[in-house]
Amino acid sequence: MNKILVANRGEIALRIMRSAKEMGIRTLAVYSEADRNMPFVRYADEAVCIGPALSAQSYLRGDHIIEVAKKYGADAIHPGYGFLSENADFSKAVTDAGLTFIGPSHYSINMMGSKIAAKQAAQQFDVPMVPGTDKPILDLEEAREIAERVGFPILIKASAGGGGKGMRTVNAMDELEEQMRMAKSEALSAFGNDDVFIEKFVASPKHIEIQVLGDQHGNYVYLFERECSIQRRHQKLIEEAPSSCLTPGIREAMGRCAVDVARACKYYGAGTIEFLVDDDLNFYFLEMNTRLQVEHCVTEYITGVDLVKEQIRVARGEKLSFSQDDLKINGHSIELRVCAEDPMENFVPDTGSLDVYIRPQGPGVRVDDGYEQGLEIPIFYDPMIAKLVVWGQTRDEAIARLCRAVDEYKIKGIKTTLQFGKWAVQQPAFREGKFDTKFIEKYFKPEYLTVSNSDYNAIASAFATQIWENGRNELKQPVNAGISNWKLNRKN
Ligand code: MV4
Image 1 (cartoon, helix red, strand yellow):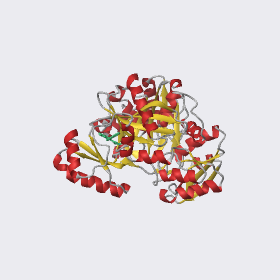
Image 2 (cartoon, helix red, strand yellow):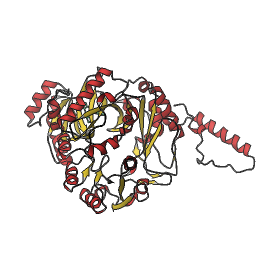
Image 3 (cartoon, rainbow, N blue to C red):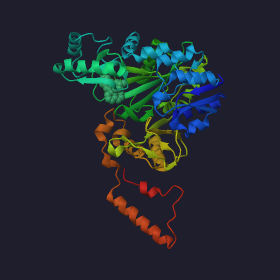
Image 4 (spheres, rainbow, N blue to C red):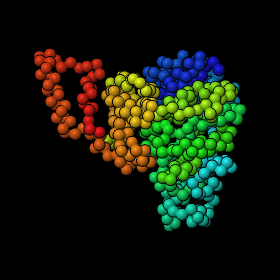
């Protein structure tokens, strides 16, 4: 493999290119007109503009991207996450064009893309699943029988859905007919397939996922779990590894199940098996994500494995160079997604430019970002501008480091989730590991992030003192444009 085309943008494009570079592989960036000035475009050995800002006219044009790869002599394509990463037809088209797809086969993506097929595959290995069905519901009568058997509340899920898309809760029999109709028509318009299945609704579960790696020779390992419960509207905000609630026994049981699911779909490359975990630590297989995930960095921190390099080695046909016994959990890692969103206004995406952008540094801090000071955040793509990832010997050290790094991070020009993240990890429920997917709903109120009046008084008096001390000299702005630490020295 001599040259990889990275079919993605922003932080993940850079992330992939860095590993490629360390392996002596050249990189080819493809970018939209909105991304001309982005760091990933400059970082690549070569870059080609592939169309207008709209993803459908640039990053989603699989055939065009394959043409670019051939024209510029790339022999492999890495899709990153999102965009074409879980498109089975794209995986096949890349392979059919004689190129290497750095990701799973068309076969695995197809099977795991159908939640029903995924459950049937997992069933063969006795992987625990939520009570319900693993076949499409054919008629209302059948739906009634299943609801009767598992008991309300139930969830109707679209087989082609996933990540929270195409789910409906049903609380009682008299809602079933209406909800079945809605679920099917929604699934048809969203995914072009109206297969639905039913599961018992697990209230307030934890969301824990297992990272797996497989090669093309049938070898598999699991790289432990990521706790991803801190999310809103199915958008994760904080992830950590390891989970503070699993025991070594349950970790191993989940790991083995995850490997079984991967084996069931002949998976190779990096993949993630999602589980729901209830209060009694029962775990249930939900679905598999057949891509490198946003939050892969916490796994890299605790295992020392570079997941992108492993993806590349597996795609080249190499065998995994380590076994399960070689893998140990070292320390603790937490990731905060720094999104251009306003936590004060229900996390609506915020637009603007990064007037000030200064990264935190120091021991145990990794910032994977795709922007730099002065750049605009385009409205066309995901609002995530960076991932602040920390490592500590212990969970407490990781939490303290995350808070310290948030304090060092200086962003002006757009609102972000930074202060929200610092607030979240300091909550007693988070510190004690007693939280689930309802954490934000249950504990967060926007006013927790506001600067109190007494803080304003402190700021005013500090300013007055500084002006007085400076005498007739103009108040000089420091390089970090006036964001000094005392402003951030708030209670939460
Ligand atoms: C569930 C569930 C409760 N019971 N299934 C949402 C994402 C998709 N992967 C599956 N999801 C859920 N499935 C049963 N039977 C609750 C969720 C769920 C959820 C899961 C993981 C992370 C966050 C979530 C938020 C709301 C609901």
